[in-house]
Length: 294
Length: 277
Image (tube, chains in turn red, orange):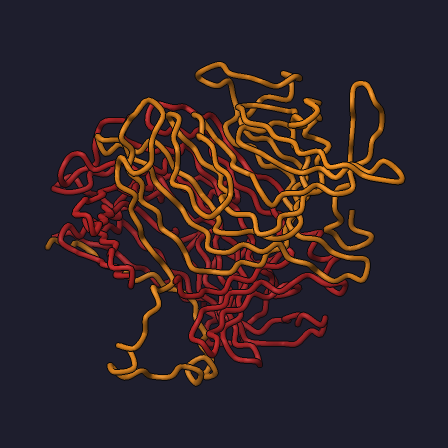
């Protein structure tokens, strides 16, 4: 019988008055500052060989995901050799908090609102060693074309963690969902591999698109100067928008950390493309609105 | 099924009543009247449908997201394919600059005018496309856009790809168009198609896109002809990272600094608030 342990660390002050924090302080949150609930997933893994997730689009070609696994780094993907990994630790747990804090509206007005914060432990993002918490995540993606051809591709995230990633959300006056956050994603390897061996990733490196030492840091809005919103239009289309910077918020925006991406090495089939990176990403405005394809 | 442990990711979501209030239930009859293709479309191009260099068989799978993206952004540096190429190719005049297949600095998408109004760079229908050989191996991948409109500022250090841009050169009382192009790996010049004059790509700092389609960045392990979308021109993508940037691209406001060697420049578009350069 496999097991997992889920620990809850509830601070002694959980029933007391909530203590507000701002984004600059959030990266220092370790679940023990003020009122919060910390979660530790200890030796957790999941394998679902027969789970089938089908995304069926109107174009008639469904995307089918099977053979999921989420296991400890370098663990076997099936069988008796499977072992788990950790998300968080007692000192640095996965973190959940409801708090009152200042929110700056796009016109520069600051209000006090209730936010819900979900955060992965800061871990190696802040320099501590969380290698033990790295996980391997994978699934087999199958595309069954109308022609009868089938594309099978393994999507493999090896040695990944999300340390320092957080999402803060609140309900704005105008409806919908407002949010801000940061993505801190690392993977030792990202591999997109042709499934030439049934039920297991191929060992043929020439069949893969492989990205080594992948790091992504991307701020998504900010509650103090650039809220992001998620709404549904009258036409039932999804609208995601990161508010435009304006003269009221420019000073804080330009002083904030910028986004970045880096891959130490990228290979595709037998071509080694070397390193690739993007530095200094500043989103001054973003609006994504879906529409039906014709 | 063997499911050892299932866990639920805890995500934060405060869904206001306003979201729910805007949703309208559809009956099966109403649903049957809908004829749209949905937000995401998966399409296939069979091997043999697009002629390939060397006559190899390549099939393609494209996933298109039906979305309008309005973006205003600044990016300090974009470097793709850094290091010595496997084939050793380098067509730059200044080898010190050719350290990557694509090397852009000070990229701006959109502008901010003197009144502080933010003008977006507009993207329609982004897609990703995978190329496979007849063994099913991945040999190419590209990120492309159905159409783009707006202003982009960039300092091009090195470029690999097919680029064609009309540079509008101001000569005092009149201006002339430099219809220029580059089609190679690790180039730092663009050549005027009529006069044969080489112009440093670093001078094309202000580009305007008008209904530009077939814009993509790809990575290939071998030369590939991707399926052509729209009316825009498109050549063969060579090994490594490759940019296709043709048609509907102008670079207005070029100025002539000297005659021999010809040197032109234009100013980088403004995309920051005053006082924050």
